[in-house]
Length: 327
Ligand code: ZN
Image (cartoon, rainbow, N blue to C red; front, top):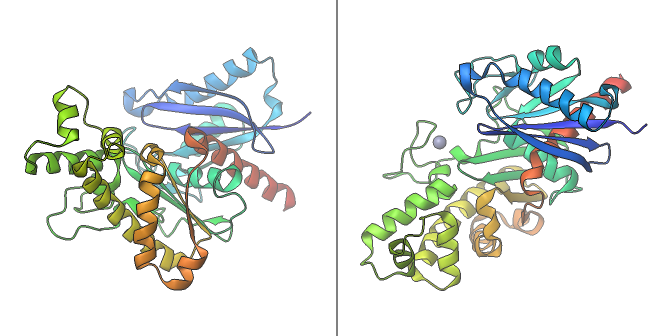
């Protein structure tokens, strides 16, 4: 009987789950709402319950599952699978997520940060396939990053490696960031950051732009709308994207020079803009990256979309189980 892996992508609003085979193919995926009430105490019980319910629905035995990989929204202490904190979920400090889930499910569990598992997913089955040195950056509401060096996730001393979103790129009058600093990359290239840049540009502009027209017509000011107006050659929207691309390309050139990865994969909702974002980012990268880096590091859009997390989580538990059988 072919064994399955269970990938879990624990988010602040929804928890995505998937049974995945050893080749990284999704057999069945579903999601549940993340219950943050009572400081997130029900989260592990809810995950255990939904697994049992889904196995019953599919008429499968629990013994089919080798283990559970989890992506969690916060820095992870990899040695014991605890979360240093998880701001989007609750007041968690050194929360023993791995231990609790193992007790609730009677299955082996491995935990890593959500941006890290997205990087693992892209490495296994996505745009990063085949690359052992890979950096993945996720542009969503915030900006996440994962660094894989020689096939291994880089965690750093306290689980904060790969915090690409908090590289400072605006040194004068930078906007405040969720992390407490100002001028972080996240404040200018996340979906929220792009909207803020757009609001600033609209305030300074005389009101003749297409973007302003669309907003006047009642359309919601979103990063998507900015890209849509740029496609229609709106100068104001194009200048916003120019700014976004500059900061992102600059930060990626620093990352490129530091790590010389084979691939830098850009994912998350904002990356759906495709070439409209990637091409100008590549231009800035070409301007600032070291020549040898430029020749060998490719910038590519992510290909797995929302599945990157569950697939990466499955890879993580697969590699852990493999290691244990070898030892
Ligand atoms: Zn920050």
